[in-house]
Length: 314
Image (cartoon, rainbow, N blue to C red):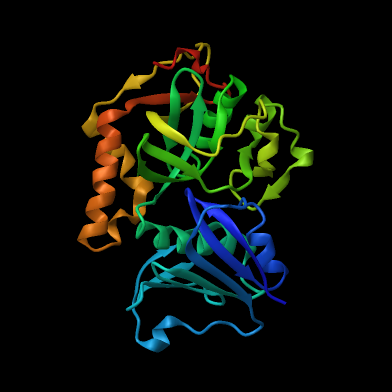
């Protein structure tokens, strides 16, 4: 039986339809929307593995974990060896196989399919956390996996900020400026951060990751504050610092120039290199605007010490 509802992502409405429990679980964290629909999102389940796009003469151009991406006449084809997504500017269609790893489908196949579709509408994916800090505005925290994005963002939340996202955002030019919208997923927290933030790992869901991490519902964010989006006014780039025996670490937020900030923004915006010149230029323009307007700082994360963000420049 096919079910349907309108959901919201990146400030847009999506008309979603699905069949089966696997599909329903994937859409569980996406909020309902009253916005008019921009895209169709169709999910169906099959016991037959999806064929490789290479059988249709397509050549893969890049990959996200085990998911291969192929350029097609309509847009993109994504394939993890069993499940497959077809992507265009108007629709995203997924055929899900039960043997696909849930972490790959939920963490790579579906997010990347939607990210590629939303790029055509001016919403650009970035690997970054984001918080809305009273008196400061939206602080974007870009970085690769393990950089400390969640630790930094949740430490801010403990000190009164509202969480937009702890890992992935979509950036859009809006009247308020460059606005960050979340990919709404569970919180992923390492052992030290969980203990420091008083999150009980016995109530979390262990993740297959090294070092070990646990997943918690977004509602358990320290301070209990969530924000649906935030205009970005500051950039905080976390950098892990090894412990110095006998020395008390001091916060030292190093300011970055606009050109340095842009260099730091490019790797977490990896999709920037995939598109033809018009879309690529639009994303680079947005990132350049953000780097030139937002105050950018590098924030050290000392091993075993939760950062004190009261000194972060406002």
